[in-house]
Image (cartoon, rainbow, N blue to C red):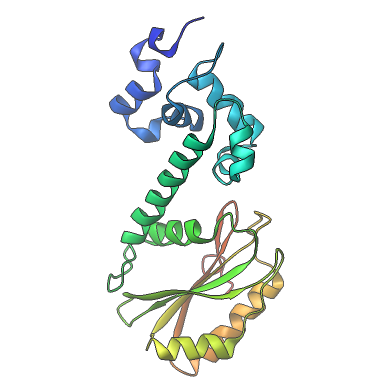
Length: 224
C-alpha cells in the first residue's frame, strides 16, 4: 500500500498547506498533519477520515473526553494531551484579541473568542463582555451557571456588575449545550428585560450571542 510520501507533492497535506495555506485543506487533511502517522494498512489521511466519521465530525472529536478519545484506533493519552494543548493555544490566541483595554475592532474575532469560551460546555453558562464608551474591553465575566437546558439570569446582578465595572456597553453570550444555537423566546424576552433595565443606567446592550454548533447574533436577527 502506498504511503502519503508516495503521493504527488501537491496532494500531500503538509506540502499542500505550505504551498496553498491552511485554509485550502479539508478537516481530514488538517487532522492528518496533526496525527503525523497512520496505522497498519491506513495512511494518516485514511485514519483522519475514519476518526471524523466515528466522532461525527471535527467538533465531536475535539470535544471528546479523554476516555472516548483514547479508545479510538491511532490515538492515545499523548495525542490527547497534544490536542488539548493545541486547543488551549487557540483559546489564548483569540483571548489576545480581547485583552483588557483593547477596542473591539473585529466582530468575527469577538464571536470566535466567546464561542471558544462556551462551546462544548456540558451545562448552560450566561456571560457578559463589559466595555467602556469606546468599546474597549473591561472584563469578561461568567455570571450564571445552569443545567443542560437553562440558566437563571438576574437583571439586578447584571446591573450591579456593570456599575461595578463602570461599563458603558455590554455584549451578552450564552451557550446551548444541545448544539442548536437558535434563540428561544425566553432568550429574546430575557434580553429585552436586561436591555430595558440597563438603559436606566445608560449601559447599552450591543448584542446577545447564542453559541451552539454555530453562533447566532440577536442583533443581526433584529431581536434586541
